[in-house]
Amino acid sequence: MDEHSAACFKPGDRVVVRRGYPIGHVRTPYYIRGCVGEIERVCGSFRNPEELAYARMDTPRLPLYRVRFAQNTVWPDYQGKIQDTVDIEIYQHWLEPA
Image (cartoon, rainbow, N blue to C red):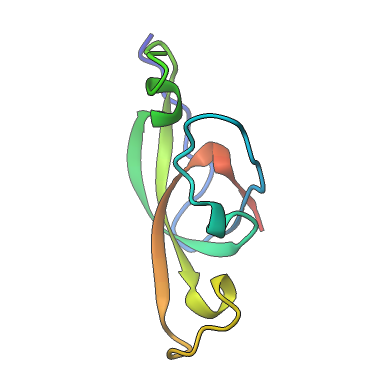
């Protein structure tokens, strides 16, 4: 199977990271779940590493995005500059429109 899922988001779209807490191999950082960010770029489509960790090779390729978050919204006690950001690459199944 070499299917691709279509990208649902484009650069500039605001998204929220799903608050899922599944058991197993998860690539989305715990601290970023529930946070709102902006799509910085679409990185392409790739096999989901959460499935590949269990040798599930027949899953479709998923869009991977680089999402930019204001650091003061990720860490409320952040003392740095207001314009400081953190960019994280996140697969589409973790994102919802904000």
